[in-house]
Length: 174
Image 1 (cartoon, rainbow, N blue to C red):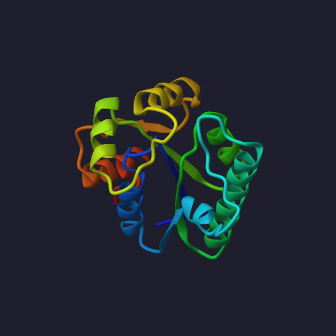
Image 2: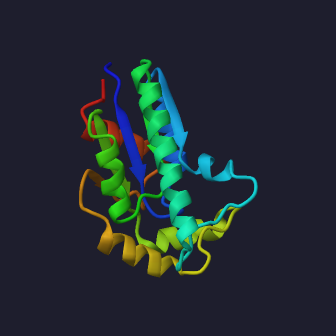
Image 3: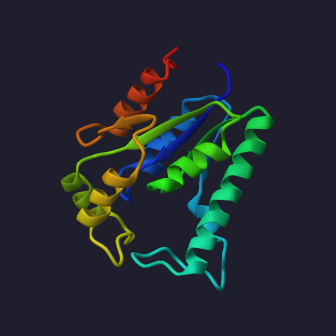
C-alpha cells in the first residue's frame, strides 16, 4: 500500500482522536500526529484559542500548524503514512491543505450532529468548550469551513465503522 496523509478535522468531541488513532493502526507503517501536542509543549506563555482570541493566541495556533505540517512531511518523506488530526476550522482548513499541497492528502471532516457532540462533550474527561457553546461553534464550523474532502456524519457509527467508511471512500479497503 502506498503511503498517504489523512488530514482529520471536526469540532471538539467529534471523534477525531479516537478515529485517527484507529485509522493509523490500520495503515501499516503509520504515524498519528495530534496537532494539539505542539500546543501542550508550551510550558509557560501559552495563550489558548477562545471566542475572542488574542493576537498571540492566533500566532501560536499557526505556529502549531506549521510544526505539525513539518512533522507530517518529515514522517511521510521517510516512508510513513500520516494521520494528522487537529481543529482546522474555516480558513484554517484551507491553510493546512495549502501547506500540504505537494503531498497526497485525504481530507476527512468528522461531522456528527450537534446533539451527539454535546453528549460526548459532557462525557469527556476534559472541557473543550470554554467561552462559547457547542451549538455556537458547531454552527460556525458548518458555515465557515470549506466543503472539501470527505464529510462524514459519524453520529450513529462506532469508531470502527467510521474508519471503514474512510478507507472505503478513499479506496484503501484492501
